[in-house]
Amino acid sequence: KGGQILRGQKGQSRVAFPDVPINSINLSGCTSIAELQFYSACSLTTLDVSTCTALTVLECSGNKLTTLDISKCIVLEELHCSNNQFSETAMNNIYNALPNWTGKEAGYISISAPYGNYSIAENKNWRVVK
Image (tube, rainbow, N blue to C red; front, side, top):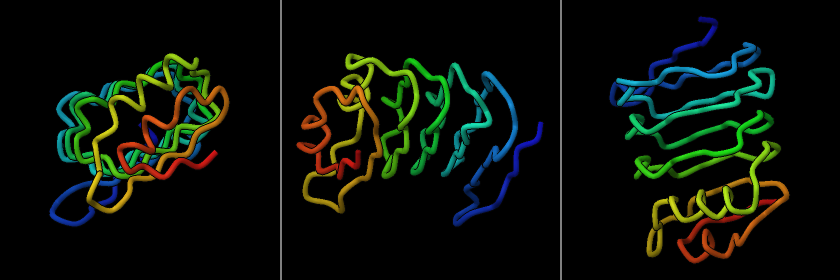
């Protein structure tokens, strides 16, 4: 409710929640979503993107997330996850789950403190922006 669904290339969708206050969302079965955008007004406390296997861009900055499992997002190219409530361990889990873009165009991740060991991301050819 309140999300904007926009058709993208190859039938994939871009879904944006610009100013919708929601704590969580069920994305099960959303396998063709290419871009998800949850802005700070959402106040997300949980986000399960495990079925979003076509996800290339995830914008979830400024929410209240403490964990984020992106391990099934194998084509993810861009992740904006700054200004959440991640611990250093949670950040390291995110870095470890990022796809490896070594030898390909670099991925992009924006983060905020606590940073954790972001060299994990850099070693997978991710450009880390603090």
